Image 1 (cartoon, rainbow, N blue to C red):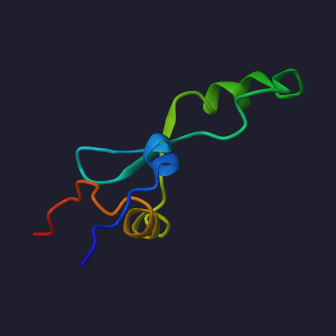
Image 2: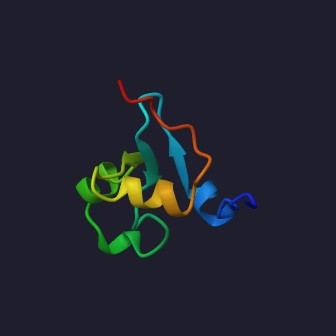
Length: 72
């Protein structure tokens, strides 16, 4: 059985946290920021944790060799 390939675009966009969740950058921070208020810009700073419903799909399909949290 051949190895699965990691989707490099996804590997650059998502990182695993120590607890096994997925981190991703927040959308809407690149341009047209003058039309957004300060609260919007401030709240979209940094990264967010991906929702529990979407994360397994990304890990299974795009990041097959990501370090998954060991289920206990």
